[in-house]
Image 1 (cartoon, rainbow, N blue to C red):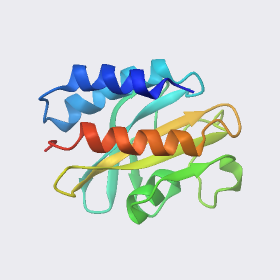
Image 2 (tube, one colour):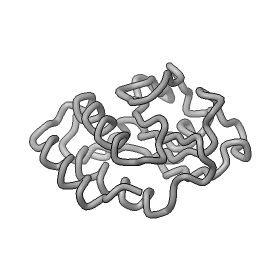
Image 3 (cartoon, rainbow, N blue to C red):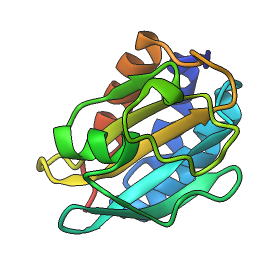
Length: 151
């Protein structure tokens, strides 16, 4: 599990004053991917049109290019506006296998300070039950802090 206090300090410093959502996503994906040893794919899917997510900045192998809100773990996080902590992706109805090696997943909705859904943060792991409620809580706070001024 990452040292979330240290990760928050690093990302707050790197992202200070930045309002461009894509620039923020690129920086966060890079730092988080290297900080979370259980994440084999770390990235964002951006809301690009109503009910549609498209791949954004990420680290790891290829991801799915387009995910409708009605499909998969990422779609559920966007549609419901709630974190999706999935210890076993095989048990998640409608899971989209962007990578056949993925065993567990954590997806968080990402909001601007104005309450606009910008997209979702997606962490995939080749290890079952790789993410915890601690990850959910820390990353939810961190995303709110970093995207507060995003457009």
